[in-house]
Length: 286
Image (tube, rainbow, N blue to C red; front, side):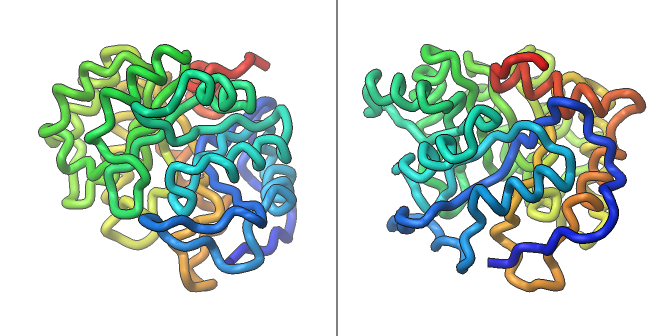
């Protein structure tokens, strides 16, 4: 696994007290990859100690750990990571229509606050399960993290408009066929946000962009969405950047955060890092 060494002066991004990283993954020994998903990251596994170093270096106080696709529908690693990280961490798990009420209660007690849909290769649960997961999450008071190719958002729009839970559209929308700020696809995102239960996540911009740094194709649409509703933007590191395979391509977390946070309207940063994720994930206010 590629993990960038944290060296040098204090980061230039002034993270406020209570800052939340809304998107990261973590892996502990003893939880193998399961069929249907990608393999585990190469050793050394990106574990709690490695992430604590990143938190301390960047000034992050709280974290949302998202169930990794390698573990598919087995939340064992996620629950173990939440126990290891303690009260600063909450989790987004994978559940489906067959998940028992007792299991959802167990996951809630362990710190799970959301459920995940990933309609992309390797995802444990696709959009076929959207309504069932939404119903279970809503009953539990959880949010739902939804990830799909945003280029297809007009096809999925009626179903997304009907969601009852608080939910977040992941990874800058992943408009894989491209999108411009004034496109019907971005109009649809704003329409969803205006319903009052949809957020948009700034995380893993390099996964959504068709360009290299500084990802100008994603900048424009992200700026339009953030200008329209800065109270509905959350941010995440996407650590440990599992899709990066070459050391020279591994991002500098501070530079990446500074880049995308500069796309926010003036004065919105503290809300994006603290208040917005508190509302989305049901966290205690700081």
